[in-house]
Image (cartoon, rainbow, N blue to C red; front, side, top):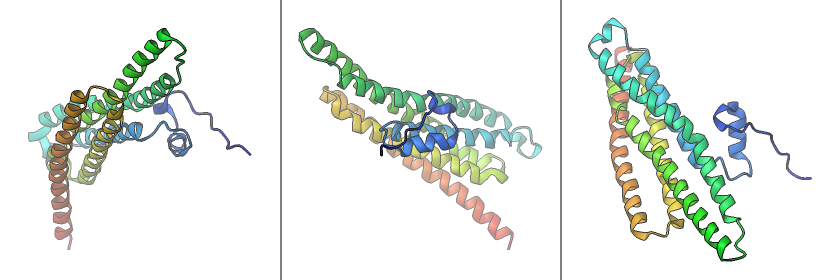
Length: 225
């Protein structure tokens, strides 16, 4: 008996959560890690936005209200971009799969296939690279949100930071795996270095955010005993 197929909506981002998860778990190679990384980043950005929203306008946090408004503008922009990248990553992978199956029966078809493969390969690199960079940009605000945001939401700030870090690392991994198809060795080396640099900064940022969150939670626990 053949495996039952599931009819999913065309846009991943508009699917019910359960459907999206089931599609990721299915035999289909996409959506995969790239789309998951973008979604993780979008959720992380949303959580930082939430903490900002639940802080802005409160008297106790009036001194950081404007700064958090600026942060929210950035995290909302990141959320919007990463939401689009969920579908763009799967679309890029599907384009590459189609390109590999193009006919090459003569010189004209061979040249056309090679050109499309090169363009599709570049897209499979550009999309997760954008995911990685966008997550890194949002993660730069995580420590401030955790330190200055509504203390009742400090755990949310921590989860947001963790989600962004996952999106950053996941985006980078998807860049690296697709560099195999890039013929320009010098460009591949430069992109690999860019990923490593982003990972290094991301590691420092998440460590800082986690430390702030943990110190606040430990302080709350101490006060309550």
